[in-house]
Amino acid sequence: MSELYKWAPDLVPKPHSWGKYRQASPEAYFFLIQYIEMSDKMPDPQQLCRKLAKLHRVSQSPTGQFGFHITTCQGRIPQSVSWESNWTICFTKMLKHVLDMDFDTNGYWEDLDKVAERLILHVIPRLLDALVKDGRTIKPSLIHADLWEGNTGTSFEDGNIYIFDSAAFYALHEMEVADWRCYYNKISNKIYTRTYLRHNGPSEPRNEWEDRSSGQAVRQL
Image (cartoon, rainbow, N blue to C red):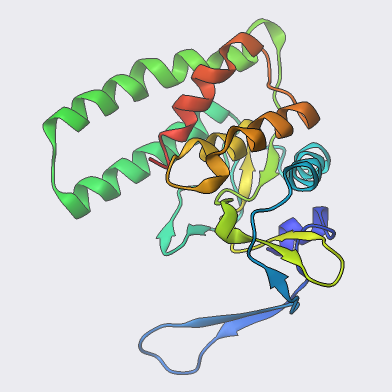
């Protein structure tokens, strides 16, 4: 949250402090952040997407790479986000981590293993390597990485939209809105993705945007 606040103080409540509780078991931590009275209504697409697109454009990875300097979590689930210079490698590593946790939790499923292998060996490299083909480059952008309507709020005082409870890391900016494809969240309403793309368009090759977005959404499904 501190990294998000550094780049987007108009979008993120100000973090104040964090620490570890004295008791040894269970291991527990606290996090203190600016108190803002908020509504839990759906965020205004124009304001949210304009601020989000600005965050993605102006943020600069401290290493020039994709990932993060510490392990971040989606809820209680840790992400594999160590630094990588290549987005294909970074995303593949995260996806493998999710699949490994699924197999550990739910047991081995042969059909899923076969599909995952094809996805990792063929589909993801084909879609993501094209981003840097023919001399193209892509910028690591700071993303919230768990942005659904439940992690947004609208201030009662001034109508500003804020985001919180992040799983932040530096990624391809398209990754943020790829997560919005998940049908079980209301932010999957296409008005949000369409509005975002008006503020910050797809990377080249643009005609592969839908396929890339679907592929990167697999991490959430």
